[in-house]
Image 1 (cartoon, one colour):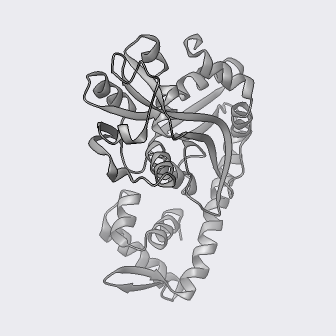
Image 2: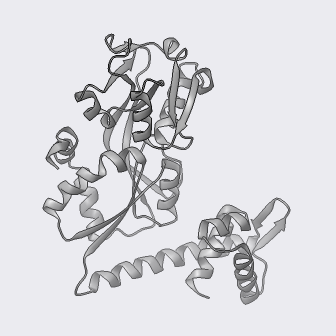
Image 3: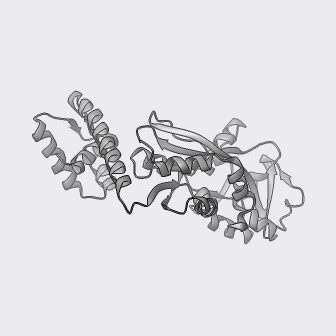
Length: 309
């Protein structure tokens, strides 16, 4: 049995679908089916119950799944330790970051970190909160940096490293701008430009609105975009307002392109979190980087004075 077959088995067990597992692994559906057949033949038992709705684990499959997870974790830990022994080893940290953090915070955070730890290489993947959480669980990235609610999972460790606030953003000369705040009822009557489903920003907004008796469908959503930068450009043309992180519009507000205002009857605070996999043994470089993120003075310097980096 090889690592690839274990990865295929794990993907099928977790997605409960051959096609979905193939998409996750970027291989063909017949290849997945063949490898599952090979695994079952090797162990002489059926690991999956098959039906038109997909596949589910048998009792033997449930037992095998637990061992497969442990074996893959052990293989990953061995690889990490062997890499550390290399004479020409440069530390590497694989990070997954949500769009807000990846586009607006990570560049300055890494620039500051390189001043104290220049012998580390970073690989950064940017996606929405749901994707990054899944990547941490699947060990595609070692550290996830996300905003907003985090999916609950027994293997996800969540640590807060900063706090952010969502604000209403309008063009600088919008009639709301001079007031500094607006009500939810007023927002429901204008056009809203919104982040895509699955983003931490949208999730925070949906949960907060629900607590006030509103639903996102109560608003006139004229556009949904997957990029904060695109949203800001659309808002600047006067096509509507948006609700996004205050950290992402600081420059445009200083340049009098956009104006950030608050909602009178709703506070939209959220935590910025570090996600790690409880089953991973952190490398020295990963521990140092996480410690840096918990250094409030350092992160405040990065966020409050971004032009220095």
